[in-house]
Figure 1 (tube, one colour):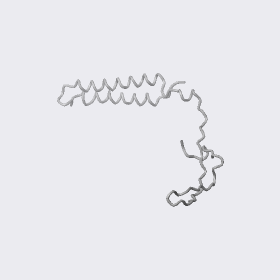
Figure 2 (spheres, rainbow, N blue to C red):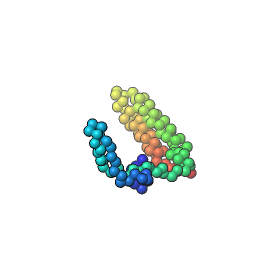
Figure 3 (cartoon, helix red, strand yellow):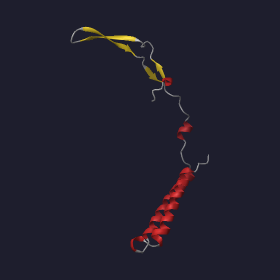
Figure 4 (cartoon, helix red, strand yellow):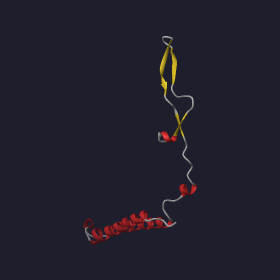
Length: 117
């Protein structure tokens, strides 16, 4: 919890009292600095249960995310189908990366889309 003084309340009867203790080695009374005001944290007001239990994404967002992951995997599979040496053909250099890129764009859209209430 933050140590903001607006959220703290002082413990009564502890402000500006000088403490004394006896030094066991020399049996002399040693005065210590005054005890600073001690504060206890105040619990913030309870938030409503509807705000806490609300899901960050809706069902359509999750559906779009799953479709985006599937499109990305299909794009990588298309890149493996290229028969040219080291994947330097049309499938490995053009079509596969475009499909993967469209899957990532779909993922960003699924994350940024606001769910319907």
